[in-house]
Length: 228
Image (tube, rainbow, N blue to C red; front, side, top):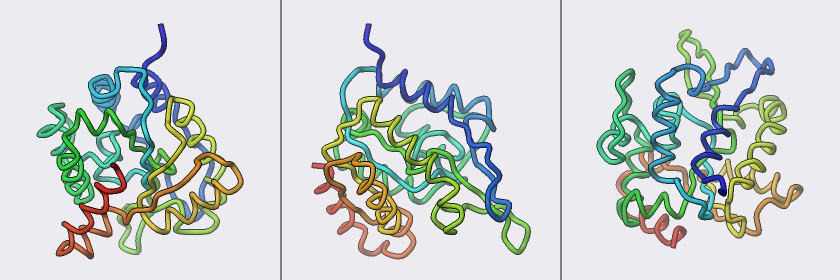
């Protein structure tokens, strides 16, 4: 019997590991190792929406954040969306992530979670996140491209995991990338690695909700056009 998309994602997530010492004391955010409940949540989510062998188009974000995938293990899905829209309860943590709000508005407009996740697989350039201490001593999100040295340290990890995601059954005719700076790095990698035939660039949900909230409907239309 052919392995399902769900089984491949679950194995992929369980095997994720990055142990290299990083620039400026930056640390890796791995939700699958930091909270035992997340493995069960992740398993339930993917078996619910990906329990088949169909191909999906890939949508790539930057890397998991502390309040979204860094908590739930599901890209652009905070605990509120996970519980109220995906009907998967989580007890150990609670999070509200603005990017998740916008993404789930897109999903609803597209036709709901069943249809959306039946057509698309969302992950990130780096499937593990990064955090660093700010001047106040608090741990905050860090993007893989925030420092040239960090990108060089994580680049082999990024390329390897993009290839693994493609091998799960991703349609490589087009990849939707979220964030213009993120797209610059993916395009650079794609030029050499030839992973995708074409790349569609959309503004990142975080940018939209933080700086362009009054124009949200315009961005919603742009997203739906790219997904159609």
